[in-house]
Amino acid sequence: MHADDLILVSVDDHVVEPPSMFEQHLPVQYKSLAPKVVRRKDGTDVWYFNGNQIPNLGLNAVVGRPPEEYGMEPTSYDQIRPGCYDVHERIGDMNANGVLASMCFPSFPTFTGMKFAELADKSLAAVMLRAYNDWHIDEWCGSYPGRFIPLALPMMWDPQLMADEVRRVAKKGCHALSFTESPEKLNFPSFHSEHWDPLWKAMCDEGTVLAVHIGSGAGMQFNSMEAPVDVMITTTPIKIIDFAADILWSRVLKEYPKLKIALSEGGIGWIPYFLERADYVHEHHHAWTHQDFKGRRPSEVWREHMITCFIDDAIGVQTRSAVGLDTITWECDYPHSDTTWPKSPEILARSLAGVPDADVNKMTHENALRAFRLDAFAHRPRAKCTAKALRAESPNVDLSVKSVRGGKPPVHDENRPVTTADVMKQLAGAFAVPIEG
Image 1 (cartoon, rainbow, N blue to C red):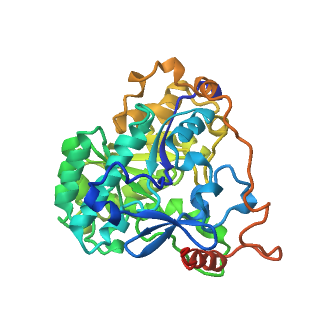
Image 2: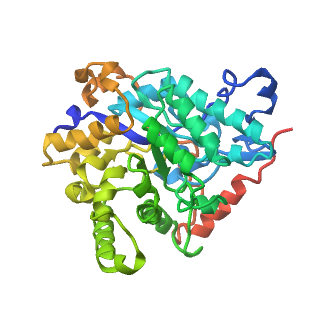
């Protein structure tokens, strides 16, 4: 299939929340307590909430910048592309990239809304989190029906409140909930306990997908501070294998056969061996480990429950049958540093060369639209959903690369690679700058 003819639905993008996001979605008595954007003495902008500064880190919004300027330094809104935080500009950027629809993960609250969960006043936390979900569903996604897959944040501190929120947002048309790959690392009970059962039941009842993003548990993980940072960047997506194994062997999939789980930004090339290994382990060890899949292999159960995604994964595409063709979706990862924007159709077409059109359609949009219950074609004819048609709608989007540092890298030593220690030092500095005034 030619790049122009692709219909692309991205199940993993990100939003840098705009400063005005809480204005229309909080009762008046809570507005003074809401997170707010403030400028620091170094000219960068941070969210200030509950006594804490939450900077927007560089790698989270580098789209449109030269790669040599990538890093973990904090940024201001005027340093990042408007499509990161302005929904109207985002649609232009999606059109310019030939992307029909997008699911956007949060930035400052974290993937699991922990900035709200950390509040001592849980009633206030619930108000703030509901306001966030209402902004995301009604304002961000609602501004352009059919162009976004709504994604809600969870009330991690109370599974019944989580279940109630799943049911509330489902009435608004939201059928995806962001969640953690490791509850225990966030000081909650594990997947293996009955603690989360009210949530699993609500999700099955509402047809809501549990979207588990890489880094949503322990965050960045390092074997050595002296290692080149490339080590962390290379292994981060694959580390979701720990969650994959955890949930596969847990009681959850056995007791909640309708539950669907998305591995967000985890890639797919590693999955065939993972499933082969799981089947081997079950065959050789189930007699003494007491695992019971009712006569089926773990890989069969996996493909009934899991939704996978990839950015640019030629090996995964080649082994799509072993991954599970009906589980595979695609992602753009805008505006993060791994994104293929604004050349996603052309880059993806290379990996899809020689793949039958029916398989291409499943991976690029059909699986995503079905899994996340988005009827995009109800809002526009299919012929106007192709990469070529969308690009024609926004021909004047500025795609030029724009420097904010004059080409200077944030971490610079030409005599050696950037190390994990360099990045951690930069990250620590991102939180240390005083607020103006």
